Image 1 (cartoon, rainbow, N blue to C red):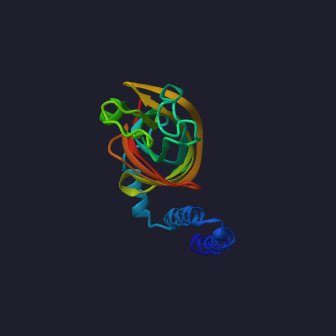
Image 2: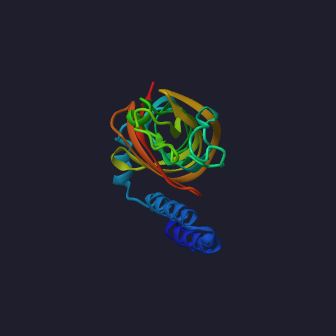
Image 3: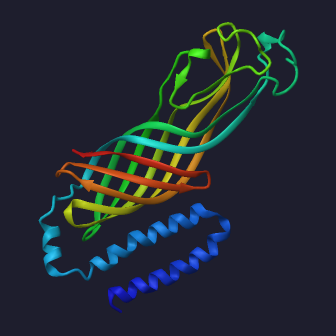
Length: 262
């Protein structure tokens, strides 16, 4: 069976898989579609003319071993918290009623990610990589002057004092971790495509923001498994840029950044 016939068989089988998982939601379907779109050019490339293969051989060599990663990552966490009145604010209206001060939420967490990758060849033009990164965000200020990459800071629903004197509630996420397994296929002109299986862990904190001080009421580790396609371009022998779209049950996440092989 030639490679074009193989591609036809792959598409037919994938269509059956799409039909099976369609009832489980669009993210799964989109991830599988992305996989097919990535797989198609890889298979067809096996039938490319000899001159195309020669052009690929002249492209920048792909290093093997460790690399540093620096980039931006967006993780869908979809968390909402109901807050009780802080015991120190028991003079406020309905202070003893659960959820009396309102709710805060975090839908899409944004991070700077820094970490390491190990990459190795598994077959001609195919490579496998393992990534491990830390996720970091920044929050500054308190109350009405608070700001942050992931901060939702609101004045108590039962506190009508001026903002400078009022009590606030918050939800925030300033750190986490991410691990990923990936496979890539080299294309001409130093481009590569691939697929990624990813797991992010985000520590979501919620509590009270009173008198210029944050007091945590709860900290929750939110695990976000996802997968999707990757596209990259090698700028030089040691530096590449790449981006990934990640589809999971909470929605779509993104990752983009630099890869520096050393």
